[in-house]
Amino acid sequence: MRIKRLGVAAIALAAASALTLSGCASGGSNDTAATTKADSTAIITANGSEPQNPLIPTNTNETGGGKILDSIFAGLVYYDEKGAPHNDVAESITTDDNITYTVKIKPGQKFTNGEPVTANSFVDAWNYGALLSNAQLSSYFFEDIEGFSYDKDSKLTGLKVVDDNTFTIKLKSALADFPLRLGYSAFYPLPASAFDDMKAFGENPVGNGPYKLAGDGAWKHNAKIDLVVNPDYDGGRKAKNGGLTFVFYADQGAAYSDLLGGNLDVLDALPDSAFGTYKSDLGDRAVNQPAAIFQSFTIPSDTSNYSNPDAFKHFVGEEGQLRRQALSMAINRPEITKVIFQDTRTPASDFTSPVIDGWSDSLEGADVLKFNPDKAKELWAQADKISPWSGSFKIAYNADGGHQGWVDAVCNSIKNVLNIDAAGKPYPTFAEARTLITDRKIETAFRTGWQADYPGLFNFLGPLYATNAGSNDGDYSNPEFDALLKKGSSESDLDAANADFQKAQEILLKDLPAIPLWYSNVTGGYGEKVQDVHFGWNSVPLYYEITKS
Image 1 (spheres, rainbow, N blue to C red):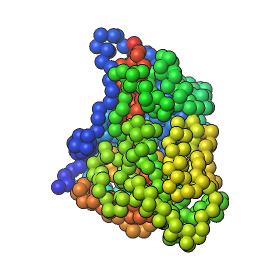
Image 2: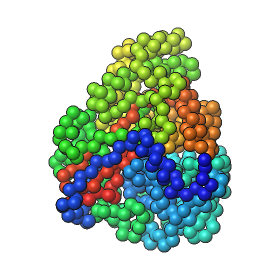
Image 3: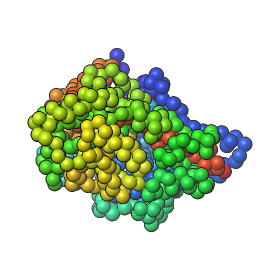
Image 4: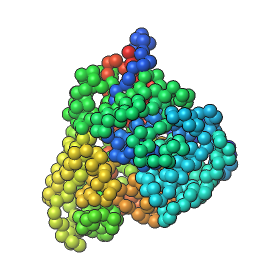
């Protein structure tokens, strides 16, 4: 039953219960803080990666930039360790019909440049993010608000400022989970000064969160970014340390060496080479827990926007569907997750994550994700009758992310089963690979993955596979899939919504716009000098809670 007056606290309770039932593990912690006095001025060092773009909330959809944005901005709500939302800037979010929401923000808040945080700070930022001509990667998140358009510049007419501390949101149709989405970075506010020169703002962003940039030159591109505590932040994520330094590593091996050498405090991704030793290396400071992370590789579905559509000529139409299924069945996921990842990954049986309420391992069509060499060969041969295969199958990946081991293993599995040439295609950096993908200049299949923005099944489906979605890198489009997403989003009952989302996934299992591989645990660790280290539901450490002695 739907509670008529729906506040964030109600959703928080539901989300926390759901994640408890689905077995989300708690993060690691070192409680020596009880006997060792923490230094509240100490800087915490953590691994990161060079952001793909200037740090504009609505144009950042990758984890390197996301970690920074989430540290320097505060949205209407934030998510705790288990994924439950709590009010941050919001005082309340209420509705009578799941169509019109009234948002009241806490008075007296301000950005780090002294500007007040008002209702306009949100409304103006969301309008900027939604405007077609601004071409923001996360514009998709505003599509449910009245006035949003994919075809022309259009203001979000569903946003109305009532007074400095109040605004309303009118949606195109009922969305019961809409408040749950509002902790994602696309919904962060912006100061009025940002609109004077948005590109310059992105290089030196001014936020309202628990941290702020440590002055001019704090962001040293391809090296690190330095953050210090924002003393004016008074939300639920108040920092217990003196600041953060995200170090941008070219490879995970160097980061792990720094952790072992005492030069890095927190690491949330291990190199393959450490999987066999990290538990003995780190002892109770080792972390291996489920997280809302899904891994795949994508083969473009609609190649009309790609610079070289002929590169994907074997993966369109009936031939393409047969080859996608054959490739999927040619991958020995259980062996790869055991040998390469040493059981820090779990073979995928859908497109979402087991830590999210509503996940299922028994979807119709999920057999396509099981290792079946004979069926794979049969399907590949059927595709060859339509058009004989030529060339080499390649998977592009960023070499600075520790992906070579599994890419080589996947390609070898495909090569051995299908008797074709298959290999990885490395690019030096994440930013280089992502730019080619975003600009549709990539000419091979490419590594993809998703770290959830908020704890809901829809978040793994809509942003990645809905028509025109901002993170739909393969330009997939299926009206039946879109209709089921819309139906699920408008359900007032969570179970009914999840049933619609599962039906939508069964369409994905036929079309395979991406090839699901496995679910990731967050595997990492922390140094001897830090305490109170917790890794959240989405694998990101709760940096503001970490103390250091």
